[in-house]
Amino acid sequence: MLLDTAAEEIMHVEMLATMIGLLLSGASPEQQAQQAAGNPAVAAVMGGMNPQHLIVSGLGALYADSNGTPWSGSYVTAGGNVAADMYTNAIYEMQGRLQTARVYEMTDDPGIRDTLSFMLARDLLHRQQWLAAVDELGGPTAVLPIPAQMTADKLGENGTYAYAVMAYSEDPSQTTTGQGRWASGPSHDGKGEYSYIAEPFALGVEVNLPPAPATVFDSLPGDPSGQVAPPKQASGDSASATGEGIINKITETITGS
Image (cartoon, rainbow, N blue to C red; front, top):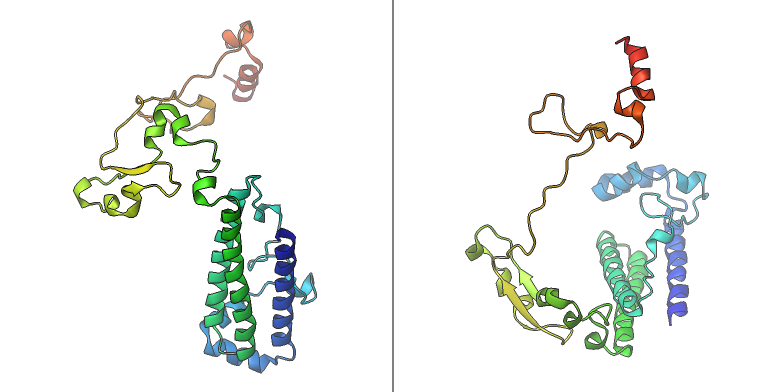
């Protein structure tokens, strides 16, 4: 199923590239100007076209995003957890289908709409397919939380907050966070009950971090509130300890002081 879907997605790239090629083939400058004048979105696209489309690929399909950034492994989410990856795939289908629907609404060309409606249909199937794969794995109550082995009862005292929704409004009476499905009732993984904390409280102690070293230059000269830590001296280095280190000698030579 994974390999078949990957093959189909590559087919979609070919379909879109062919469609765009047919649209651009034989389009005169006058026709292009007419389309740009009648649609601000088209004008913006044509005004900012990526020259690599011509120079690098000879008007062929570029495996790149709309800004010309080449596809890379960073586009791939393969976390090793099958359930997490299936949910990720479903989300990608939702986002991709949303963008396709927006392009669909930008044109009244019947050929383009026919192509895009086919892809909308396929992406709808793919989204359901990934969620069906989760069902094959046992469904949400079996795979959630991810990882399924790290349930709330294995988190010690912190497990208390695994199903607690917290609000951070300055005025707790003004927030509606506690009114949602997420704030009460059984959790979606079937392993807990949602609760609501209107006024979260600190669990730890306030920590004052040490100042940055002087060589980081975080503070402005004479800043009364910007204390910095003095540079550390190397242990056992009598020259550094007495101010006769190599840096000091270079400074003295340059400044003459």
